[in-house]
Amino acid sequence: MKQEVFPTTGIGIRACTYGQSKVVFRGPRKSLDQPYMAFVGSTETYGKFIQEPFASLVEQELHQTCVNFGCVNGGIDAFVNDDSVLDICRGAEMTVLQIMGANNLSNRFYSVHPRRNDRFVDASSVLQAIYEDVDFSEFSFTRHMLGALHDKSPRRFEIVVNELRQAWSARMKTLLDKLGSRVVLLWFSEEPLSDQDWAMRPAQLQTEPLFITASMVDELRPLVKDVVVVNPSRAALAQGVTGMVFPPAQEAMASEMLGVRCHEEAGAQLASAIRAQLEIST
Image (tube, rainbow, N blue to C red; front, side):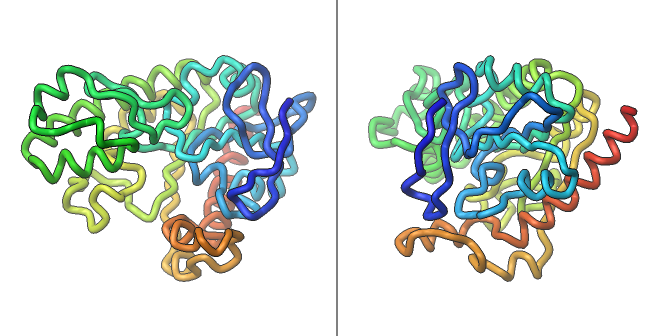
């Protein structure tokens, strides 16, 4: 087990690993000897700048250990081949899987770092042929690259979006199959879960989770116990960074994230949904 203090959170969170996983998760490390629940997801699940993210709040509400497998900037690829995390999730009473964007996963057009999934690694020959007028060596992050491709040609960009959606759907089905049957999907976003075109949304390429539609999530409903949709209230969103802990230089970054009240609302909805599922199973 590795333990250290994350230097970027300002909270003094202890980091830890589980089994042979190479991903460093939010600590402290939880005991797996008693019944537990697992939470898998990206920055929101991890709770960057948040003292008590929704996984911790569910733990308090249900009085059961909750293991936080949130990975900052992580996507599906951070988990789908991580046997240690998957084994732990299969042994959980329930696994909450955050719905993550389609931009941070390897696909036919480009590859990402296997753990830091927001890092762009390489463009395939197919994508280079579609965008022969783009120098892909200029990009380090997926969102920067996608923004440049959209600006270059919105028409060609739709080909990329379709590929990402297909890759996301296939990868999610693979991940759910590996996680087992006791899974709750979580949509935790300021954006509604709908089929509205991403380009018509105010945030466009800043939308989270990016490119995911209600129809894509509906395809997964038969594979999970429940889908919990958390759209934080206006009052929660209005709290901004109140109660968040961050270095002064990262205030702008913190302001773009869902805050303390948002996590409280997510924790309450999740606790209620999980309790209902556990009652059904018993």
